[in-house]
Length: 146
Image (cartoon, rainbow, N blue to C red; front, side):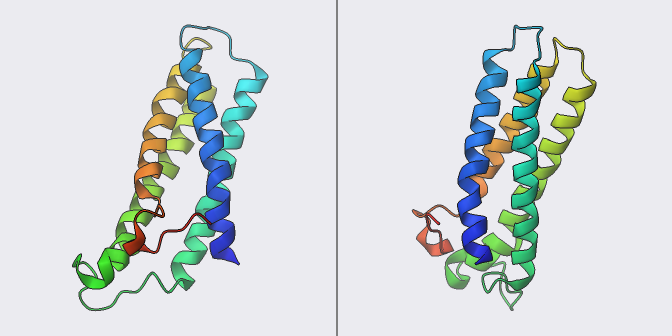
């Protein structure tokens, strides 16, 4: 059940992050930062935090995370153990930190700089997240749509 919740919630997180990034990029020259902008950025961060916590619960209970001998070698089970033990967890943690710092810095920034702060931090986090998702075309990692 947690795996499906974690996999399904990714679509909401991705949608919110993409909308937040495009919103910030489209308003880079604007000095107005509305309550709607603030809420969009906050919801994107909060949904990612929920997703992140579900991921860490799965990290300790998933059969895809096993520290067996040779887990760092890419030949071991198609690289699945290395991906979930290290790459996925590390990139998602970095994205978590970037989203949190970006949101915090945007709250403290001048109105004309808020969108730029969100655009920079959220875009980098989104790129990391997209790279770290076990997409269905990465079948060796056990990726699925849900």
